[in-house]
Length: 364
Ligand code: F6P
Image (cartoon, rainbow, N blue to C red):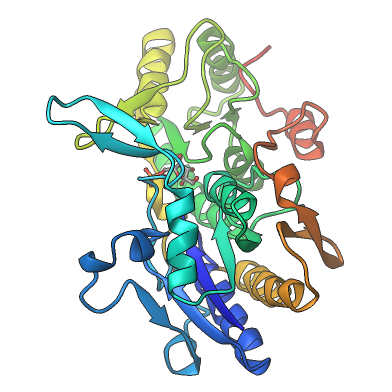
């Protein structure tokens, strides 16, 4: 048995714990393990990797990596092999599906099965490879925690911890200067990171994509605080949040011109200064919440998922994703898991708790 590991999409704290656990669990069974560099690029573009696009994994290179952030295999959020951009001489871009070619490359390398570690995009690629005859197990990863078929994804707890700690630090400087601080956090179209870190830190306003807000409502919350003698306000805004009568804020990538979410924090600060006359500053936490050392919870979940993915293969599973359903790790169909994003429901207990504590969500 020869298995391959691949990490795709944005990195998340805990990826190395998955790689380490899956490698040890597979080696204990006497299987060969390889890692593919940068998502699937190591297989699709082997010439770009003089040291090899496919690397052998064993104790010598995965030992002691579980506590490290990032991914030792590298990752990419660009160049989906199932929707691969090809630029013609006149600049026109067309898209081709390279999944059949990719499955052939796995066969050329003598790889029997793939453990694909990724978020919704990478797991959709894994499902496509499964449909093309590849033996595949998915492992859910994302700091955004927006995958519906697992209780939680690894990376989320660390992202919430770093965001909370950062917001804590802004409280003291905001109070000292009687300022508004707007903290923009990642999370794509789900408000989990903003909601959890906002409630944990005691932020006064939390704006999430699931609840369209109005600037007037946020300004009223600030004015209520001022009237009560609190001359500073902490606003946590998810990158995907949008005002009721507006759209999400995006910025264009300088190289490939792809759009990504970002910029709402600055707009919120400007609007609030305009409405309240108070000084407002913006802090964009960005990639800080997904870099660096994973918390114990993410190392543990990564280790459990890595071991469970190998166990799944040993049990003859195929086309499934490992998923947390405490106290167990279960298998759910990959087809079922992809394309089902979990956003914050309006009856979410943490949201209700925030409301009961007097937090403004910009909608009253
Ligand atoms: O999905 C993880 C995530 O960090 C999102 O929260 C964010 O929108 C996106 O990735 C950023 O991606 P990139 O690092 O490719 O800009």
